[in-house]
Length: 156
Image 1: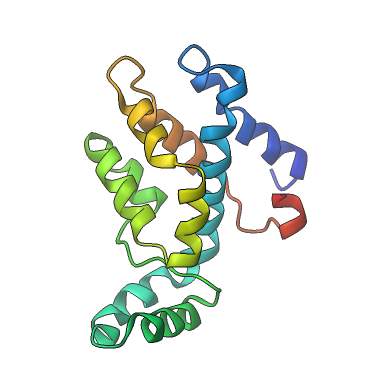
Image 2: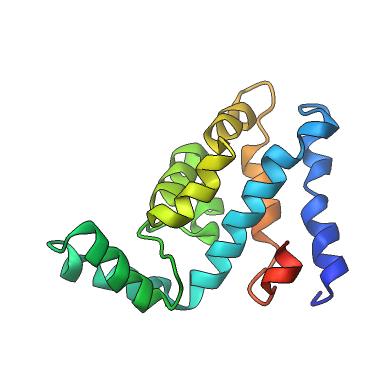
């Protein structure tokens, strides 16, 4: 499954879950931010625990100093302070909306801005609505896709 086309097909396979609850023209409102979240999660996974372990040590620093320190530990231009990653999200299906929001809010400001651009909180609410009830299924499907080795060009 290292082939780019296979991964793209898996990502767009999420559309099958959206069919009926979303118009085809609205699929991107879910698929794009979920793909970005999953990519960020995959990139941060190798050093996620180190970032979490460092949180008490940086607690008293200014926000900008915290971000710089945690970004350095994460080995990226962003980090996530939430205890949740995709594996932990799908391990607790009964609390998926709150835990997903916690995961999103745990990102450093620059990474969170990307998700906020999509007004993704509206989609979380819509997918969690009892009429649709597809939020967990979408998160689970996206969690199955490893986007760690995708480069910037492929992500585009």
